[in-house]
Every structure is written in C-alpha cells, then in structure tokens.
Length: 258
Image (cartoon, rainbow, N blue to C red; front, side, top):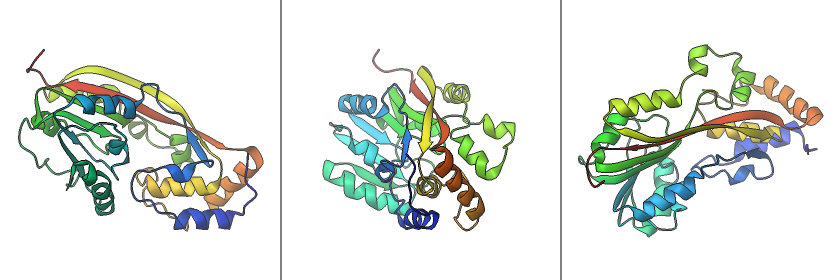
C-alpha cells in the first residue's frame, strides 16, 4: 500500500531520524526484509548459553547480542563507532558485559586463546587471523554475513551498473577459503537471497543513511532527482523490490575436546 504523504515530508522525516545503533524498528510498516531460515539470533543465543567466555565483534548498539536469553560468565564486545560504543555499553553493561572501543581494522585487544566462542552479525570485514588467534582450541566462530550483490537493485538504481568484481565480492566460498587459510575448519556454510520491499521513499533514505556503505557518500541533496523519481515510481507502481544476500558461516579451531 503506497502512502499519500508528500515527497518532501517523507524525506524530511527520514533525514531527522536517528541512525545510531543497529535497531531497525523505524522501518516497521515502511520496509520489509525476509529473514534467513537459520534464525541467527536464536542460534547465537543457544551458543552463548553454552559458552564460558565469548566475544561479539562489531556489535553495533548491542541489540542483537542483548537478545540472547542467557549470557556467558565472561562476555566482551567490540565496536568502532563512538555513538554505538556508548549505546552498546548502556545496553550490555547491566548484563555484565564489557564493551571495548576497537577500530575494525586494528588487532583485537585480547590475549591468544581467550574465548571459546566468537560471534559477529554482518561484520564490515572479517579478520580471520585475529579470530583464529583469540579462539581457544576447540573454539567456535559463528557469524551471519552479507553476501554478494546484496540489495544491488537499489544500489545500482543510484550508482548505475557496477563492475563484476564488485557484484561478486563477499563470496561465501571466499570466506571458507580465508577461514581455512587461518587454520580454522568450516563446519557449516549456508547462503540465501531474500526479498526486500521499500514501501515509501523515507524508508529508502533512512536505509541509505544507516547502511552507509551501500551508496558511499549518500546525501539527499546529491541524489534528490533520483529520489524524487523513485518516490513517483513507488506511488504509481507499489513497493520497490530488491533482494538481500546473506550467508551463515561456522568455523572451529582445531584441538580441544572432541
């Protein structure tokens, strides 16, 4: 169902909305995305409930980690963006977790073999050597990641056709090879493409402001003509449809108890 609100009203509302954290509740009724069949948050929660010492990488505002019903006795999380560090600390500290401000590209500030579980949902990049280093023998890395050409129907609407090497980046099989090169054994690897609908132009603007790597340097002013044309298209034809790409990877460090 399309909205009767004006282009300017929808865009102004989306520009004013906070993009801190990794909470997508703002999109309710305005955009939808199918969820992968494996249920990452539930599966992550099960693993956290069994862990002794766990680390969540690039935790955002801590919302996904906080959804776990039971946390391990020792839990740390890293985050590189200062507003998210503050938000995650406020959310996770009452549950006994420590949030460490750590740039994404820096070595992890933890000792070798410190954790029996490392998790990460939608990391910008996966530093396999560092993950292998901080895992204890028998430890598990469990992650849901963005796969190739995710939501590229929307990205290419604004940027035009992208080179093949960009479209095929973030390949699950490349992740498998990188994990194995770091000395880990991949025990599960699954991928899915999922339907995404943007029901008004405000949802598009908010999404591109929040997920900043989709259209780098995105601003409303820079893309106003394309945004207005897309608003008119949605008004006339219904939701803009794209497809997200997700993969699940679970890797184990050799050694430890069988």
